[in-house]
Length: 200
Image (cartoon, rainbow, N blue to C red; front, top):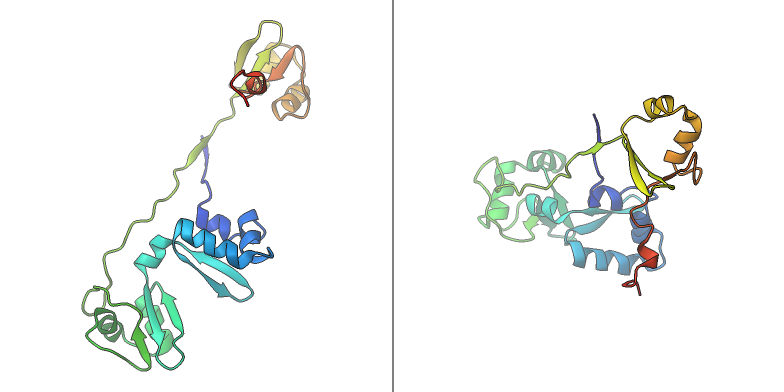
């Protein structure tokens, strides 16, 4: 059986060209949209090149913030060793900054004091939820327009062969390209909703 992995909110908002990405980057109210998005979902946006990308609240909690003493520029990073190598800092001294044991180190200071392990290490990580894989089913459901009964079809090709139906036409019906074929139509669970007396 085949499966697909649903997209996460982070992958959706950071996917160039997606509706959310356009709202955060190309919309005339992009700045307001980003503020609203952070209020609703936490985390933060940072400008990478010409686009604004979102970091989730869980990733922010698992990461670290330091600030340049001279410019007060705040910098977020997830890997202490990599950040240290890029800026000539040792993980031990970074931990001392974050623990509040050291006020400054090579022009850097902590944005907030938080408990991290002494030496090379980090605080306890928060697990980020990963969307469950969803099974892709090839079962099709049609409605027999004469009897109003559902017709469940696990295998479209075998169903067409057994009933002497044209497979190509049946496939078009299953994909919604035609409205009906041989007294069959595609099952739509919301079809009668508009006629419901509760609909306003």
